[in-house]
Image (spheres, rainbow, N blue to C red):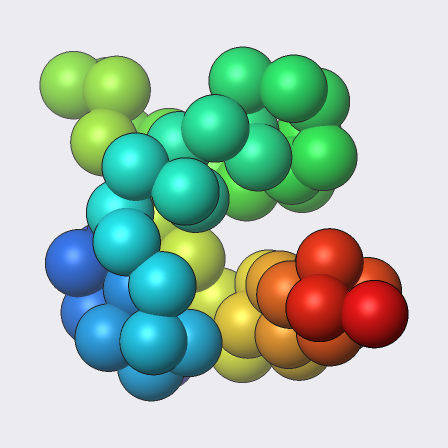
Length: 58
């Protein structure tokens, strides 16, 4: 199953811009993109983003 950045942000309760920032800073090099440049997230990406979010909160 795949998710958009909007769906992922709702699942993590963070803004889409936060996820874009993580990507810009190189924390998400594994996230795939469509030909149009849209980020496509998978379950493993969700788990990784949960870890990043947890580490940020500590």
